[in-house]
Length: 292
Image (cartoon, rainbow, N blue to C red; front, side):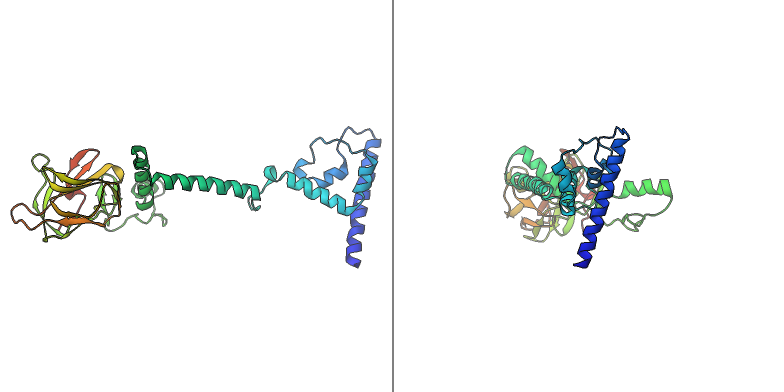
């Protein structure tokens, strides 16, 4: 109780001193319109703002109560939290609710996109899948850093790496999966043979080259039972001559996930046809895939 009384006494003395200073200032014809007692309640950044002079006797009498003055200070500080919020100040409940609402809208949009079979939705799926599954290519950043600073930054893991662990597709690095274990029987030439014929084990499992969406699963006159998958970066892979298909159009496949089985062994023609296209043009599969 003694400590509490001393605190109240100090507050009263402070308020009395401010009130006397205010009266002395007004008596000297000062043009400042703010009440020092109100300035005392405001943060330093707002003490220079023009405020009405509280000449109401009831207000002055209430301000003599230190508890009332303290409550007024808290109310004024809270009212200006949005304009004077510091970096470490916890966010308000309203701000948290707003962020939760925005997060919910984004989550619902992405969830709905993956359940809509539309061209624009498929493009969005590929973009999101690529962002979540592909590693960032640090090659250009490493070259720029070496040119500017002449050293190896520790935060770039691919800087001066001894071996290339990923198969290069254009300028991007990502690991691609061989469709099946086997040797190349007929090679790509870009004219007659726009893919490769693999000699895999009889009815061997066939795997997705990369993450992507199945865009065709059926029979064609050229390659028989066939699967086509669209991948990030403008790539498409085709798997032909299959004996069994275990996926359907619209399915999303992970890299290395089984999609079907090769056909019976054919020593002359092989038992699995595989081709890769980039931006609609066929490319040599051996440039992006390492075969046995």
